[in-house]
Length: 481
Image (cartoon, rainbow, N blue to C red; front, side, top):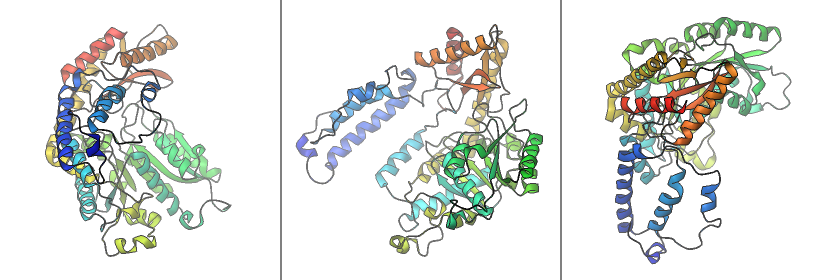
């Protein structure tokens, strides 16, 4: 980039329009080049902790600096510290969801910079939220009585759902709180031993207590055991506890297993518990006609969360919480301060009323652009290919005598294990393999624990990933062991 004068940047107001336009084009080219050539980059940094911070000035800038100097520092000092989640051989967690239309939408969203707290402050953000959420509801096959709200992540969505469950258990926590109320029972939340840690955090934040999240045993396929759930509920009732909610997983973090939702829903109905479905990852399978099975029991839920920023290729962050009769959520969280009475009056929906957050980003634009660019058939085709790649990789594991599969392959996640002379030796070798693979920078995996044993975990979900990339990762794994 050519040097701008500090004088032009130190004038009052924003940077000059011509300077902005020039750099906008340059950044656009940089982004396009980055996406086109990302496979040539090292995935994970090799810098030591604190090295980036040490390379940057400790004191804030006193005088204006030229944008080309700032961008040069970004490339030379900051970029080397990036883990490239969009790399086609990054196969940790649930894959990267960066897409061209999503990036374009984020640029537009940044330029508009609207606050979607009420309809009046941004009619388009409010109404596009409503539209995109209903499109997604239709794809998920949820009944009409479900409506949604957009949050950042499933952790926040789950906390809101459980807050409604707590309030509907005749607690009046909204008005009276929890402190000093001896009449309140001890509430219990039930999850499988494979459930996401966000449920524990929600219990902490809601004053229910981490200890009161009951971990129900899972079966040989890492799904919640229904008989064990019933036993836990009955035992808690005998002790005088109040069963509050069950969180059923559709795509657990480690193995992407799916809990038996219909059977869990029946128990929730019998004991009048709230049923929340954590479909943050696995909910995307609902777009595939051949995966209708994944939606079984969803219509019986009180709430369901899905993260389009996982399987549906919307850039991070975008999480959708659906609640049967959305007014249940509003009754817990609506609070209109005097300074917003004018903005809040007369609107059909103000999304500030559906959570603790007041200010809200215009997240719907990127989902709208991604959904329109690919359509349901295009999204489904890409998901289907990731399922194919996962089965292909699982086949390679089965054929190699050095390895064994550690869990059924249900979605785009494969858990496998390098065999050893004994379990302790195998644990050590698997952990060392993942560490060395990630440190080398050409591939990126995770390790997790299943039944107390360390296993390697590969997650697919990047639309840049091809069979060639997957084969190269398999070669890297073989070299590492």
